[in-house]
Length: 236
Length: 223
Image (tube, rainbow over all chains, first blue to last red; front, top):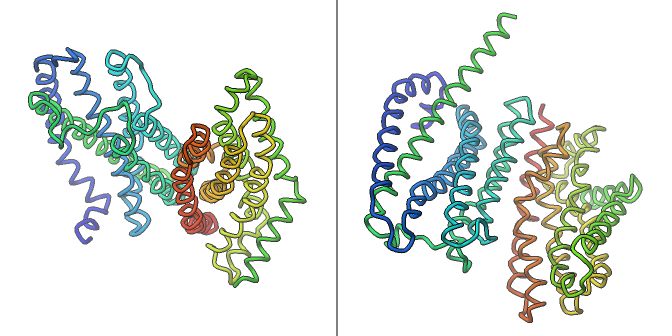
């Protein structure tokens, strides 16, 4: 735990992130450039044709959406148990990206579903649990906005965030527990053709790097806002 | 320990019965929703029997939700929640007593009304029994999970609006398994599997949510 507490200090975080941010931006741009190039140049699938390329936007968005929720859940535990001051800020800052990735996953999935399944939407377990994730993000953000006192809002948001974490394994395993239209897991089990694997993994990395970059920027903004506010209160 | 627990339970039941009659309101709401559906989807009796499980489950969850925002709020506003928190009764047990009182006043009442509405939806006898049992087993989860939302939002002005947004996604399993059990019986399969999952969800909610609710109440009292 000692390691974590060293970076709990906002001043320490500002110093560290100041150095890391240019690297993160460069890595994100590079990963997207490589991922998009690979994704657009792989041969079309023998069954799906060119629409298989939607996968390179859809799957990483879905992975990122659940990863962000995992990050919020971890931050919530840190905030509740150790009163880690930075983790509240981090959890709050991550939520809009999670909602955005979830929406992106749903939209790209619908666009992909129309040519492949013949419908934009089905009420299958994976799609439904993913839609619920979007509502959980909305509720979490609404709660943060409703409580004006940040010190009080942090634990109040952390508790339902942890209760909502139940949905994450349901999303993950929904395609195995229920017989659904959405296909099963295909990366680890090796069902994905190897040509598609490289662009998919690079794009997943790119989405996660994008999240890391924007998350860092948003945490920094929140810390600076708080400093500005306390300066104004001191001057008044 | 049972002394203060039972006292609090009876007090909340009396308040529910005398102050505003929230149980009667929830029941009227439930009956009205059930009346609106045939007007909306058409009065085809076969269709109604098909959707009855889902409609009545959704209606029951929404009806129970109506009175949830007052679960802690009234006591918070007049200060009795602080006295309850200071009393020798652990706050977790106090939350459990309040959940139990809410369930008796709404969940149980809705369950008892459900056979009548099921009759109006042309639900056959065995499916009606399954609906009754599934509501009996599942509605405690609505009160329990709802208590987390109610305790979180008790000091908020717009709490009544945020509450459903927070707890409805968490109540999805109850609706799926509850309506699923009724649907299974309609299809001629024993609905025991769905009912078992519903009971597990409900039991876990009742067991865990008093701790979360008590934590949220402490949070709101500490400032």
